Length: 485
Image (cartoon, rainbow, N blue to C red; front, side):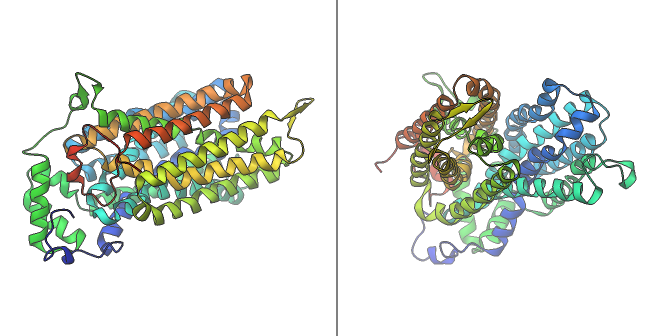
């Protein structure tokens, strides 16, 4: 920590070795990310039986699937405001109740309208989890390992997606198909939703057991509690914890209650640092990662793989995503946020250009799209290159950066705004791709490549390094100016 004397610095755990308690508490805080991944992916196994059960047309089915994204944008905006007033852990408890209620509601829904309403509520809880995980973990983690611990949120998300796909498969297999009526008269697809009760209840129990963020406690004038929590979490002497809390008090004097108007600037509309945060949040979605995952089966089929192999390759992409996230956790505090993001942007752009060029070589035979010669394997390489570079950089690092780049006085509301913009950009991406694909498939991926280039430029000229800096040192971030690489 900057400002520590040589006599006090050794009292902290060594760099890269956080206390056992702060690791466990960070894992607990990331359970919301697991629910984020689980609840957005669990509908995959239920799509066909839902369509048949409620006699939905393509528009109705699309609403049921996509309405969660709109709920997430709303939940993201509410989460920062509520977390600043009620506390981080209390809002986690609220989110767990919403997750649990939505799981039961989706499972027992009797028609299109109530299923859509429960899916919308699921999205609100997902929006809460989007904000609460990065916010809470960044505020309890020591600066030296904050990136590694904050990356647990992204790891939890990808594991939640994997768990949802696995549980869907197991339930369908055990109960004899997604429409099979066996246990308690409920078909398998309803049990797929009910499975979400388990992590939701776990999240609620953990929210009652983990300590409140010491920075939130300090901001609300609860100094003694903040000192105690900080000393226990970081395994440091009480005197050191008191000095740290003094710095927190100095960053947010009194009981400051952040509001969205705090993000505004007469000259630039939003504060410059907020524009940067909003920009990286939007570009994380606009580089097209959802397109790669949501349309991966058709991508593999288009290059000559049969349906079974296409599903296998989609699972492989998911596994690559998990492994690359592990690599990101190992690298983020050693390499730094900016360097990882810059490298990721360059790699994503290269992969997307290769995919775009590959599809431009496509030959149409009847209704089938095929890629001749070596262009099939090269396009696959480009797609997986994009996945790897995204997962090792822009996937986890953006949420780490958003959780720590804003000044303490506006962190909650600024992160909430950025997360909401991320979801809105995701909605725009998913709604626009079918039309863009029909106009020009190579052109679609060329647009995403341009977004990757823009992401490099934004990081290069707008993002300042936050690695190994305490959150209270971010008070000079109102006019961001990138250091030379």
